[in-house]
Length: 566
Image (cartoon, rainbow, N blue to C red; front, top):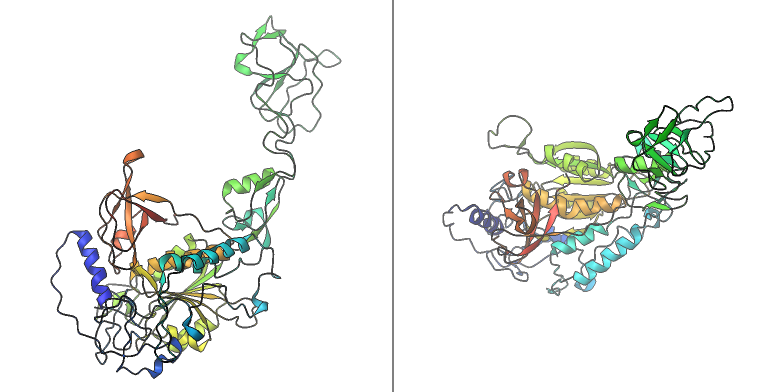
């Protein structure tokens, strides 16, 4: 178990109230030099340059080569651990291989920018309607720049040091990493769940004419009234919703039966409800409480006038949105399609049915990640089980037609961790490489160049293999990226008050499953016990994830909440 895994497990155990045996002393790492991602294969393991805030026992940020002997907290030369859950640092929440940006001349980290600015064919400017996402992405990038707290790079010859992104920086980078997908016009019955690409304005007045709000009598004047009659003296038939003939003009003292939704006749001063009307001698009508002028009449344009703005772009199309659009005269809507996502499950140690056996464990992420992405607004086209096959991974990533690829496990640098070599082979651009968040530190975000003649490139989110660590990666990187692709604004995180103390990581943000308790001024959130990187009991029964700052938070303190997408 790596030093970071031990710390995370200790925090989880502290919150659970259970005692933990004293671990054996951690071995000391040899000092080896810090290397960049693109030359890790030339590593000289005799040098080690500890990063900012990192002690020599691997508790802090490990170098980019971590995973080649040192990723599991062992000294170089010791074999890396295999597996997918506790004790499996390849699929775990180990402190490995995570840095934001790319190494550049002078050691400056790459900001969270859209992919491939040098490739105009990948631009959204000529690919559809701008849904207002440009301003949002510009604000996200400015925010990321303002919030940047990267430690100045430490030089070792021509080697540059790049620190992992903070949690807020990673979210801002993912939110600004992509433009919205090209817009499309679809019939109303196919628009549900998509995002409006253009504002919805009223094509007519609502209601389009004066209508009755109740069943009763359309009356003219203060009363009493006599039923309106035809030229031959017969009482006029009542008015129904949907009547195509023009309603008759009412004279003072006349009344005519009317149904809810029917057009109100000219000259009507009010609608007298059916139960409030009394007959006098069978020929006249009166009411003990005459209606006020305009009572129970919905006047034309009461809800909106033609040309009024009803909904802005960026709004999710819900059933009420469909109803409003239909009432306003729309047969089609201009929308941003749901981003297409593909899930690649990595790891030969995973079983996909039955009980764990023979040193292998059940895959918990394959059944979970796809539905989670669907809840975030993606159209999941496939979940593929690849094992630890470098060529299969390269073929799957390079041949995808999805807008987003999500991989589970393999984000480190062990002998069977093929994700980063595959990204190098494809000349991908790393936007986020490691995030200072627990669990989920070794997550990554990459922009892929356009493949197979496509105008746009795809993005890849690499999740750690431990379940709760992977969910941390989903809410940190996948959720804001999907919102950007779908043309949706990044929501403000609301805050809630803690009802119990939450232990914190010394330097990193923690995402902790919590439940709501009480209401009103007594409303609190309470952390759940099972919050270790490999645990699912907490997140399976939680209401949200609390964003706990480094050092922890005390009872009564307000912390931001990441709401779950259901």
